[in-house]
Image (cartoon, rainbow, N blue to C red; front, side, top):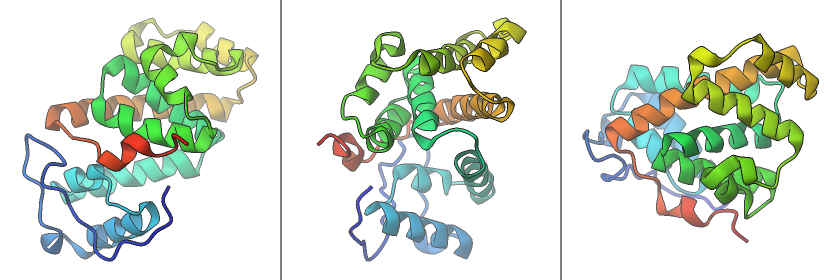
Length: 199
């Protein structure tokens, strides 16, 4: 992400269309600090922070689980973002397709991969190992009652550890939640996400 500093976080009023975006100065201190940290790191305030601040207790729980998923994992960050984009692609989640598409481009160092994953991960330029990972994630997304032991065995055969298999399921489940909430609230991605990682 961008390294340039931003003096003051800005919560975009158009971060979501169906609920009001709160004023930064009215938020609890811990939320303001987290938003300021993210703004400093990214160079802008991602709209998901503005949207989730609508309900502070949910903001805390959402980002605590997000942080656990990306910090305590047997997966590479590139793999996590591939999961997010493939799941968000089949769910047609505009916010996550754009925001996490940018992260795929950055972590995979590939300006084309995110667009391929959103359009049809089955034809993307990925390894057989990653195709198996995404097959299971998309199955869990589209047909959760069809997931069976054979799907986990396919992940083992592809080389994933037991912890990594759990993490694949956890990331997939969390972003199905995230996709649905983003679509329900009509969260809109920041313009900055559209161009990150394309060069």
